[in-house]
Length: 226
Ligand code: DX5
Ligand code: ZN
Image (cartoon, rainbow, N blue to C red):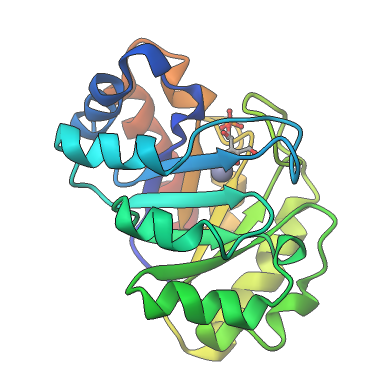
């Protein structure tokens, strides 16, 4: 069962010097969620932003869902901080958590939606004993750590496989794709089963956010309906 399309600009590519303003501009231009990439220079070779920045966005008046993508280890220590900072959803990489089931319980216990993230080489067998607890499955279509990379086409087969598992489960689980999503790649990802699209450089790298977001949404929708 396919859910409405969600476009989630990754603020990794936003203007950090005027972040609140830039995020508001993307939301006013039609973005659905704020994708918030958290990198620790340990699990991934880059360092980005933490809970204080999430709270600053809430204090600035951002009310849209904040979709936190944790690329950190350990995971559990930082989860309550993001909940307190106003996160709506928290996703993490199973390799980064010593106890995946415990982390899922921790996120849900704080009233947030939970997602599991799969790197290009991470096997889908992690879904065997977790899918029943997931609100979102995120497939990385690049190796995590940096914006502006090229979409890895092998993600399409993986998306189809996860779509089949979600449909078979009968549950409302979002299927998100992250990395290299743009006007050229979004249609194939949507046709393969994704319903939630992260786009960083494709949105914040262009002057007209409204035009980019509308175009992404249109291309995704056209490809789902055919
Ligand atoms: C990569 C991040 C992505 C990234 C996407 O580790 O998880 O969210 O910012 O950027 P683009 O859309 O430029 O590939
Ligand atoms: Zn991300």
